[in-house]
Structures are given as structure tokens and as C-alpha cells.
Image (tube, rainbow, N blue to C red; front, side, top):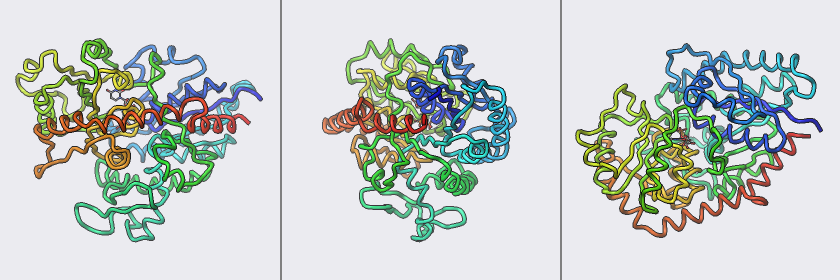
Length: 464
Ligand code: UDP
């Protein structure tokens, strides 16, 4: 058996690149050579965040890039435009790349398989055409995956419209349903494709998912960044030896290795955390895409001030969508050393730090898995995509967090922020359950655990 050479293709967003990089590291430790294919745009971002990224990562991982189909100044956070461009331009570039590698690489180093983000299932058709084996990488929950695969059922049951996937029943609060007993309750308005950044994106992504539902049949496996114990009823419902939970991939154990971040990490917060009391710091971060409106941003600052507790707050340079970020007047003086604001943190290390008491989060799936892996309870502040369903897991299924709820002005007020922090930190049972989840997650990835075994099944099968 020769050394296998896998091409890894992430969807070009931070929350997809990071876990696929982790998969790349794990595959290398099982004897694979990896070619990691970023877009030109993201490749440049990775290098600007860390100039030594490509040379420091791992000699068995080679980084290359192809165009994403957009112009340099285009908004890459506009999901509909990005997806349309990717589907139009990338298949040709990917095919050319694979053919070139097949011709130019020595026999022992030719690519053998492609592992692509499930949201780019067109890549599976390209891989099939060029004779590569195919697997899909799913970076979110199995529950979200299941909702997408069940679109035909949702149409048949009269829950969504066939033409655009929108709710059939009108009303702002949305119909609540369950796909099967034990599977988390879902709200039709919060289905992945019904709550993206704008209605055009909703439509485009709904059609994209329908296409993916066909192309994914070409994949031998779907490896999912979740763990069986976290979503047992969903994996049992899926009942497929093809769908393997191998997470949490970002377990915080790989400290020191460049992970593939788009913003330079401010590591000074680690020394600041070292100086704080155990279990005292509120960690606040909203991932890589969520935008807070200006008023809400100010209110959050005032709320953190009001808690009177230490906090570490990630304020991404684009968090309000504006070029200049205004903290409330006098905020810094009021806070002094009690709070630290950074543009981008080494989040996995932060969450693993004993000083952190809770995680105020937008509930992106990576952040969810990272909080769970570290036994940190959540204050949930979801925005879009799968974040509402992830909140359901945290608050209603695992019961390791509380929901932040907007008032009649669509605001999460400073008083609520203070009250929810107090309620969460005063609830010893919540922390106990968070630690139980941590134990399950850890057992899953440890030798003999469910994710460990699934990962071995996957790599062994791809090596035959
Ligand atoms: N992240 C980080 N530093 C930060 C904020 C986020 O390293 O200051 C990482 C975080 O650890 C996670 C990813 O960015 O792995 C965000 O992914 P997630 O799925 O949580 O949210 P998304 O960005 O996709 O909305």
C-alpha cells in the first residue's frame, strides 16, 4: 500500500477552513500526504495573519490555491454571491488542477482522493470524472445535516414550500416540528436555508442544497465534526455506516500548531488570563461572520461593564460592519484591567484556560464544540444559519447554557446581560452538566472512543 495523497477542499470561510485543517493534521499522522486547496483570497489572508503559516504547518501538507470567481473588492461574506461564483468558476479550476497533478506528479505521489466540504458537492462530480475517490466533510451538527437531507420530507409534510424552502405556515414565530422522536425540535424559520444573511442568499442556498443532495451520493463517506454521544438520536435516525462522527476535531490539544486563522491572534490575552482567578472570566466571541448592529454593540459593552466581572471580549475589526469601532465613552477607563478587548483570540486555548467561567457565543458549530470540549457553559446569542439549532442543543438538549432573548426593540439589554451571567454562574448544575459533556467528548476522541474508531474506519477505508 503506497502513501495516499488526499486533496482537501474547504468551503472558503473561517469556520470551514479551521476544522478541515485539523482533519489534515490527523490524516497526516495516519500516513497521508495532503494538498490543501484554498481560494487565492483566503490563501493571502492566512499568510497575512501568519507569514510563516505554510512553512510552519507540516511538511506533509502542501498549500495551493485556485480562484473563487469573485473580483478582489467583492464582498465574500455575501453567501449567495460567493456560492454562485464558486459553482461557476471553481469546478473548471479544480478539474484542471487535478489533471495537471495526475500528469506531473510521480506515480507514488499522484492524488488518490478528494475530501471536499459538503457544501461544495459539485467537487464530488469533478473528482469522479477525474478518477479520484471521494469523501465529504461536514463541519456542523448531524442535526443540521439531517434537516438538509430531509427537504423532500419537509415538502411532503407541508412544512416548507417546494420552490424556495420557505415556511408554508405564515407567522413570525414559525412552526416547530420534530423529524423523528429524540431529534431536537426545529423551527421552520430557523432551518439553515431560511435564516441566512438575506432572502436572496436563502433562495440560492436552498437550491444549492438540493443539488448537493444529489451530488453527495458520489461520496463514499460523510465525516462529521460532531460526536455520537452528543447527537445519538440523530445518528441513530440516519442509521448509515457512511456517515461518521469523528469530532470534536478542534479539541484544543494541538496548541502551538498554526491552525489556519484569517486574523492574527492576539496571544497577550493568555498572560492576562493567567492573572485572573479560576472560573471568573466571561469570554465573549461571535465567530468570524456575525455582525452586531451599532446599538447592540454599545449595549453589549455596557452590559459587560455592568456585570462587574472580568471579561475577555473579541471585537473583530469588522464586527459592526463599519470601518471604525466606537466603544462607549469612558468604557476603557471604567473597565481598567478588569476587561480585555482583542481583535482575534486563540479561542481554543482561551476556552481551555481555567480562568474562563462561561462563553457568550453566537453558537457557531466550531465554537459550540470547543466550548463543549472544555466544559464551559454558554450564554447563547445566535444570529443565522445553523446557530439557532445549535442553541437548541445547548439550552434544551444538553442543558449547558442559557438563551439571551431580544426585547420588543430587538435588543439584548445590558440588564439582561448582567442577569443572565449571574443566573448562569450561580447554577452549579449547569456547570456539572457541561463537565459531563466534556468528559463524553474527550472519551469519544480518546483511544477506543466512538470518534476515534470512526476516524480509523474512515482512514483505513480510504487507504485501501
Ligand atoms: N475563533 C478564533 N478566535 C476568535 C474567534 C473565533 O480562533 O477570536 C475561531 C473559533 O475557535 C472557531 C472559529 O473561529 O473555530 C469560528 O467558527 P464557528 O463555527 O464557531 O463560527 P463562524 O465563524 O463559522 O460563524
